[in-house]
Length: 207
Image (cartoon, rainbow, N blue to C red; front, side, top):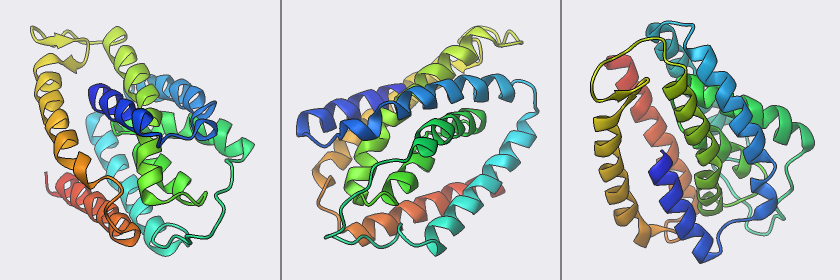
């Protein structure tokens, strides 16, 4: 998440795709929530986190499918700013849930920004820098407060080999996805996003 979000953020920054008032102070509240979520995750079993993750995906998928504003996007609609409660309480909630479940904050920030009136291309672009506080605060907390010594190859609860492999995969994914940014039809992009969430949910249920 750290490498992926950093590289993608840099690309979108150079391309002028980032909108400042959607990033700050929301990112700060997300980082605060990420610390809370990481600490809370250390007090429950892995099975609880797994089922909570599945339940969250189900709720998110149903919400995206049936609540207005995600699948459809009005081109002539002026995007609205985030409300104060969405920034503060929403930011802390996003960070806490994302880090507790071990997912990127984009699972929540994309639907939120989408309902502010942003296109899927804009919402996914903004989700990258908003995933950074989750990745950084969560990783440092999991490294510093681990209760178990998992042996060589681990820094706290962080698997260094898995980090290296996932980094290579994320860099490859960014390379392959770059030519498609902004070229996919908005409705198709939204449906593919939900489809990926469904695949992840099925993988968690069957795994």
